[in-house]
Length: 91
Image (cartoon, rainbow, N blue to C red; front, side):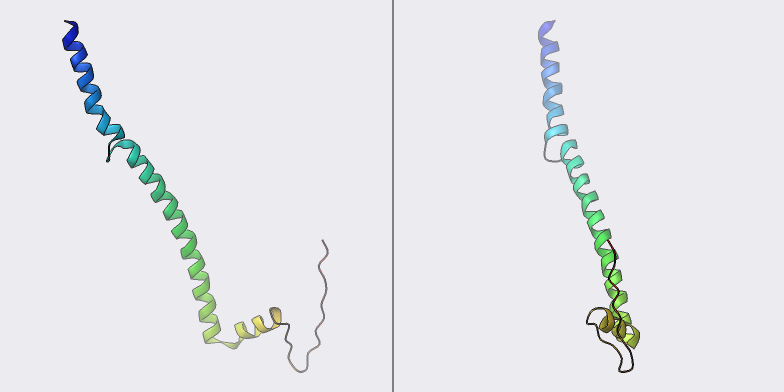
């Protein structure tokens, strides 16, 4: 009576191995799912960044306000009749 139980136990273990540790097993599915979630988060951040860059490009192509703003803040340029006053920030 003991041999059939041992044979059945070994058979169950042999059948369970591919389910858990095989190429398409649960552990692999969980790992791929984790990687997929991380990639989706990365894609979402990149889509937000791209949308911001696209809006900035549209502003630069359509009007002079964006160009003027960049010239003022990044390059420190002023119009001919303006006076530039710099106030330092306090920590």
